[in-house]
Length: 360
Length: 272
Ligand SMILES: Cc1ncc(C[n+]2csc(CCOP(=O)(O)OP(=O)(O)O)c2C)c(N)n1
Ligand code: SF4
Ligand SMILES: [Mg+2]
Image 1 (cartoon, helix red, strand yellow):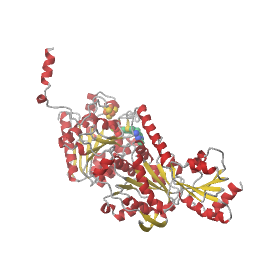
Image 2 (cartoon, rainbow over the protein chains, first blue to last red):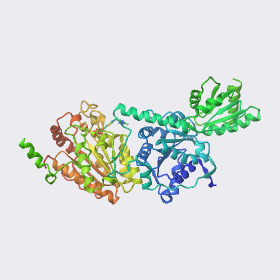
Image 3 (cartoon, each protein chain N blue to C red):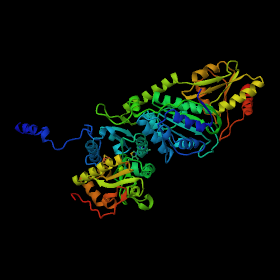
Image 4 (cartoon, chains in turn brown, red):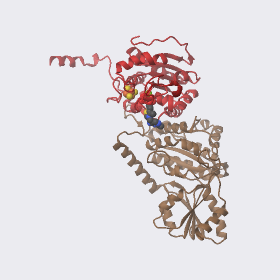
């Protein structure tokens, strides 16, 4: 068993980054995720593992520091909250185009605009549909606990390098701020420079005589060449949809109804499930863990076994679009959401189920 | 016939006094004839070759006319987003402290959209080289006004000349970064005459040598022409540059070994 600690979600991300063998963290302060860089600065990872931690001048700079680091094969990450992630979109698009691995953590707060510092899931569209310009996706992981904040850092880096793609952890202000018990994984040593060069033959690490020079870019002025890059990206996304879909089903075996929810909303729905079942309403929970690739097939399957589904989100109805696209026959599916930083209470979720699905 | 033989006779290794460095890829440059970009590329690559550090060097090209620099420079390169090269270089140098790292940027890239990245990399005293090609215009996008465009100078977005009242003043970025404790060597050069080319190359050598000392940013501005954007012949553009650009952007060292040098009265006429 790994080391047990009581930690905030944000602290768990930071500790996991050091333990995962991350080479560099670059970030800019914003609530509710500033504890990530604060924890790293206190921990002095430079002494622990040699990891670089740098407070950048902006989120624009942070993401482009990631582009530079990733382009040389290093394991790099940043974290921010909604407005900062918006600023990073150009850089993320460049990284997707240049096929560079990195980990980005969005501890989402309510918007639009400066919004609020309270938790929200309103950045779902931005996360799963690409966010920046051009036809691309990131792998998007949605943690529902402090444990997963730690675990998904390691998983995120693995997937980022496996597919040479940016990976996003879509968390929220509550998961980032709440304290829970977490079992930390054992530290993995950082790769030596020689290992980086061996593992990332595509990276710009200095040209030895015996090989061609390496160019990291997302530019191909020739449309035929640019289409080829796009086709390659699309093939990669199909592969992810085949191999990387992750989800969790709780009490779905006998369920007549199901909640579909990710992250914090899934936690609320678990409590709502207990309340509903005490009232003899047989409801289960389907929790997408990867939001891209989306568990479309599994949702299509379970939809046929139940009388209705309630998609619960802390936004005005975003994931429900992907749920609807997943269905191959008409099914009853409704949305219940609170927004602007309000977390729905479990009993209001049960009422919504009763009114919109059972009674509706 | 006989004449041709004579030429071939001369083309012997022992007769070669100057040739293309193998660090330049053998392909035509994408620059307009007469443009300064190609000359700076060559001086840069000759410097790396003479120092024998090409295998330890990572370069970063900008968005601008030199966006394709990575196709011509036979070293490992990254193409940055517009203005962000110093952010890339910061991360690379911090995680690969033994490599030589440089950015190559135009005036729109470095002094407009990338101002924050430039100033903060300089202010942190990052340990890489910034090569700044100031041609007073946005060459790549078709000759729009740059932050460095001179007062009264016409461009496609200042068709009646730059009006300082509404369009602001030309930005002397190089003097500005020289004020920051994080810069160690700051100089302004040109490449329109052999003499100036030699000085630029000397500055490049000094800048890359500085990286071995880990002492902060070496910043080399090259005031250059954009004959296409300025709508002049190459020869006229060089003359115009001497008469108009150099008085506003005087050539010479601004900061050496971490100390500001007293400004000299610089005359920068051709053949000086
Ligand atoms: C975010 C963004 N905005 C605008 C552009 C368009 N753009 C490309 S190059 C350029 C200006 C380049 O001028 P400069 O840096 O002076 O380089 P030059 O071509 O003169 O060498 C602009 C505005 C872009 N590529 N990306
Ligand atoms: S447009 Fe100007 S800067 Fe660009 S290649 Fe031509 S002369 Fe050089
Ligand atoms: Mg320019």
